[in-house]
Image (cartoon, rainbow, N blue to C red; front, top):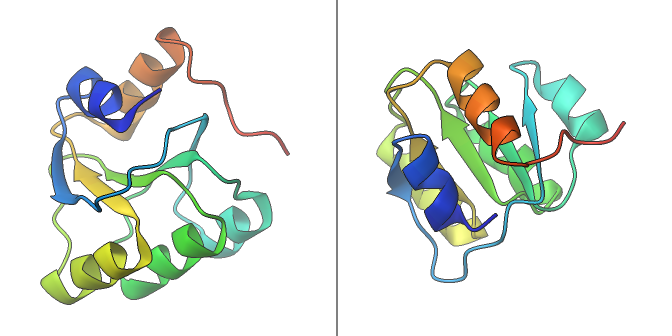
Length: 114
């Protein structure tokens, strides 16, 4: 799924949009960084309420497609600058994490594999 399709589906707006967008190949929702570090995958669309710099580090480590913040959560400019530097797209959506995941699955975005 392209990130343009993904963002339209979940009514998201970009907070960080690198030039070379990765395609979302799977999805995951979790707020425990160590858990995501153990299960991260390239192309993952990661839904989380966490907004600190370590989120970008984990997303970059696994070459994720994007980080999605539910409930219109914002991220500090310094963290967004790092996301841009690392090539990680960050979106915020007015939808809950539950609804975001439901919409992504309904459109065929598969869950991440363990």
